[in-house]
Image 1 (cartoon, helix red, strand yellow):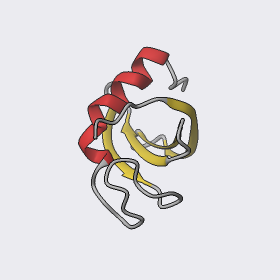
Image 2 (tube, helix red, strand yellow):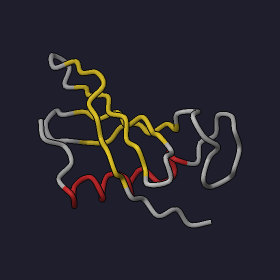
Image 3 (cartoon, one colour):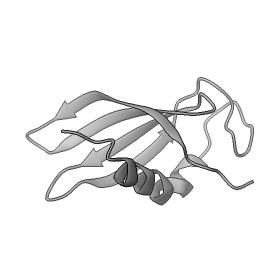
Length: 88
């Protein structure tokens, strides 16, 4: 199944400004929540994506940990850049 990334909300949950690391929680339109870990040194770069276990995975439908969201990291990064969701 192809995943259509549509982020409806992106919230900063934690940050370590000295190291340039930021932890965001993205809520997708199907209410799936993902943890996005970004590095800001020197530019914004997505370094990790994990699905939070609030609802089953929209790709494989597992209700436990899977790596499906990390396979779509570039799609997450593209949508965030296109919509300008990071405003730090």
